[in-house]
Image (cartoon, rainbow, N blue to C red; front, side, top):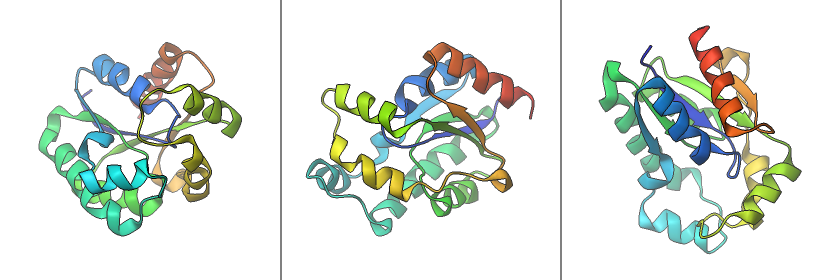
Length: 165
């Protein structure tokens, strides 16, 4: 059951925790979208400035190229992909891309962000993440999972729903 999966959600939703576990369970490669950011994007976010769409297009294209290069082998990429236009761009590069949206209450996400050490996304940008989030609708065929459970339970729910088609 190899497939390309986009694990999406706001910063602090658990993408970097769930992603490698989901990829291992699926037997595919994993990539964190943060690794695809150019230095200018990281510097901008580190200084507390949200990225613009113009900042994001080359980043999304690099992620899409990674997904497309996996081909039939599939892969899991953890990427915020907050807007539908971003997800559409990734689907253009990788038709058949499955979406798994990690969703959580802002208080839970805020607590997780406050506990993180050394991440370039400061907790002060959380409000901009939730403001930008265009939760995937039914038309996108996304699997939406609450992140208020243990990572293993979230991965199990993701696998179950991915296998159901």
